[in-house]
Image 1: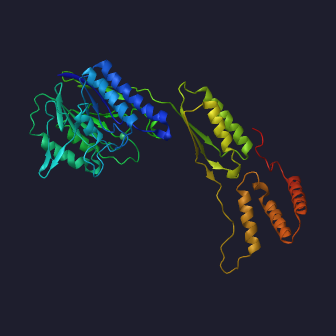
Image 2: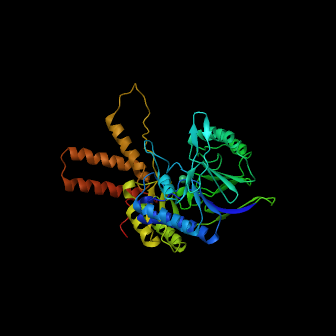
Image 3: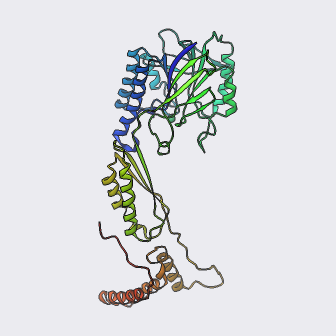
Length: 435
Ligand SMILES: [Mn+2]
């Protein structure tokens, strides 16, 4: 027996990522690419393994995209099955989802199991019908299950009992499942253990997986293409695409699944460690140079740019030239979307005072300790934190004694000068004044 099909999942139509209308179109383009690929390569059928839509509710543009791709397949005479993913499943209290609506119009075949008091009921998709638990096309029996979350393994055990009495008739059995396998993505709450997957072997020849947005395969048996577009930032580096599958039961290796790349919006992830800069000017200069290096690698299509500041900021947050860095990103990289992520740590705020309850708190000592600690957090003032704290307290005392403004400024100038004269190699008051 020979057949071929195209398998993909997690299309997430309707994702208006970062509130960008253009990103919604990107998700539509990836879907249309996959449909066009099928039209050109003429497989026997197409499998979408869930999350065709990003949400239960969709806007008209998303409907148009979905309909456009499905119409291409219909006109080419290529049938498609789909199951409900966790994103586009029926919402509590609602009778139907968009997959039902599209199935009623014959645009796709919506597969799902029926649960009854005595177990599962497998309903074949009738002639000229577009819903049921399984459908038989091109000598394949395709069984589809909605996203089941924590019930996945329990329902699969019941499914085995329900499938057992069905004659195999030399059919190649495909199970469409929106579930993730353990161990593929760290910290991912997987629905499927390796043991549970192994138990499917008995009655299934190919498991068409969806849910995890990364490509993976288990043996010559379970396959997951990953999301078509980049749904979350961490997915950018993952290998993903659609699977073009050829089945030949006469071959030793029955399944031949090729991962086909789907054009995606480019992402530029830039990480900038702020730890090594003790003043805003050198930080801005280094940031600019880094962005110039990124500019040379800029893809021709406008990218989504994330500029992430990490490390420990060594001067006051208010002096960080964040707007200038943002402007530099826009000027040099001309992004479709720019996200500046301030993920640096601030210097820890600690006073050195030792807790001794027997001793009453000396207010003036405490005040100086706090001022000194705050000044020490800033790399520009740290070497002279103690002297500057003393100067600040002197100014405060004089202000309380009603010394006038010009006199206070003079006091500050004198104190400042003394500190500068005593300084070693460190510059104080360095600030960003140039563009
Ligand atoms: Mn998904």
